[in-house]
Image (cartoon, rainbow, N blue to C red; front, side, top):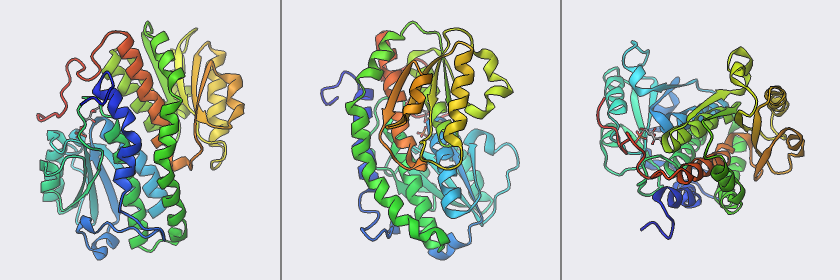
Length: 369
Ligand code: F6R
């Protein structure tokens, strides 16, 4: 049942090309038209939305943070992302023009369910992005977009995360299509890029030997930091969460630009820091900014481990280790850059002798508030 792997987690990491492909399957055609009829929300209703709020916890909330960058860029609708358990206790502003996107792998997370119920009472429309057919959150939602990652057994989420991100991209592109955004013309190209992602994830998996070795070598480490910018920021947070959950070591993710506002004080000789570097082909000076962050922490003794795009030779000079992922548009990059971080955490925890499928103190679905 573990498909020849030592753990469900390893199997599920390796299932990711399929999880993303299955989540895309049948949802758009070669002309770039999306058909999400399963949503059961009329195009009129989608046109009247003036705000999206993503509600989720843990890894699913990081998928929501990635979604914010993509959906705001594509649809020009403001997107807020909030932890479900914070949302309900602060008198949030939601009404019938708010679309709530509740992201939950299990569909049973009590914090998210309670937040959904609260938002529904305020008249908001609820769309669930969920991996579990017939679970409570999609049953109570007005609409559902299922992620087709297949059952996720390991407690720490991996393939469901990539499938959630994929589903939010589809949602964003569908909203752009329905609302007739001027961005329309690009939808087809983005869908074509998305269709190429599963094969690229496979490339990442096929070249993961070095990152696995690094995880094993670093089994004695007591603290690892993760930096990212733009969509790389939630990826950094997810990398840190995986390491906390699986290997029980202190790990923290930061927005690279935030470093100088405090966290850089943590950097001392030998501190390992993962840096998720944006594509050098991307917009603005994002890449240059992150490279200069790497220089700043290196000058203070950090041991930098860089996740960068193939062909980005500039980063080599500033990194102890570079792990390359295939080229892809910046907004889609989390589907690739997350994978080495998962593999790293899994390898390190395994080297420490921990059960990566059943980390201590954690449950697969958190059904208490
Ligand atoms: C992390 C992890 C948790 C879940 C969170 C939400 O690896 O698995 O952080 O992401 O408990 O769970 P769902 O998505 O089922 O609502």
